[in-house]
Image (cartoon, rainbow, N blue to C red; front, top):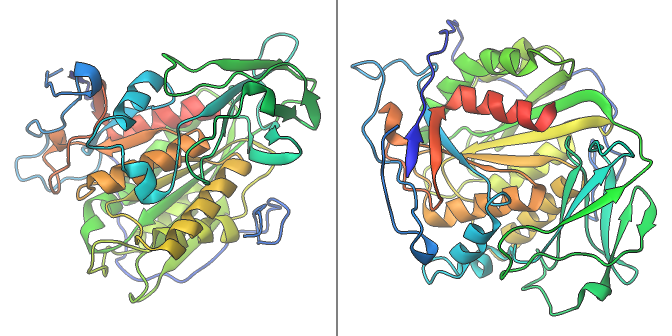
Length: 416
């Protein structure tokens, strides 16, 4: 079942030039230390029902649209849903056991089956942001990440190396902000109804009131609606996400195509001035592509290497907006694993925004990305009547929202 909740939003009018832009970067900002520039790296209401796992309802995004009669106005009209597999652990593990989907893990070689969920708090039970968290097996680091703005961190067992082994909880320990955690680690697996949280009191200091928001966007020919949306609504998103709090937001953008196109990636580095990011996007056109897969792996690599992420910020978010998967080769998959591992290690949440054209392989690739980095899954729906058809996401009950408002809500959730 899904509920449609559409909010009217003030229109934003912009004039922009449809011309190509060159690579550029903002004033130098110290990013993560490491071998790669800017990044720490390890050697490189309507009701609709469907059948879900165990007879649960799976929402369908196939209702008719809303908007202008000729559907020419894009600003403020794209609609989307959001689903957190971390908040719906039982649903997720049941879904992976379905015959239709159980092979997706081996297809992409991501195995989000066994999880150590952590919440780091201070003496007043307030979550502490940007604290380093390592899950150790003996002396080896199994998974490394950083806490989000609410103090949560998600460490995976066997995420990149095959199905999780049968090691007992005694095999694993946690290191929080350089201090060993000696109590038995709670592990959530396939049979658990919900995540078990390891709550740890730490003397770590709170992170600074700053956040980085990057937009990584497929700029191939089929992405015109989504490109127009960002060009027109980015200022609205950041303005409303910034209201009511003291968090200093920086924005950046990276667009990508495929190997044989005019370019593979172009980017504009982080800036305190959202108009700089919006001006960069206004100069980009949706073009090229051709075959279905695109250079997703190169885009992820470049966003780690070229964008100067703030290592002291309380939040780092990468919205990955696309309608096509990565190429399915061993080399590309290893690159995806490496990049996502480093997104997690540096506390960057990947929040995919799945556009029209996404198939089931792509959907699960994106959900693996957000699970590994503590993010959430966003998908466009047909309710706006804009663009091509959007497949039914294999999720539970969700609300349909205006995409811009949904992104504002998520930024506030993961930043404040």
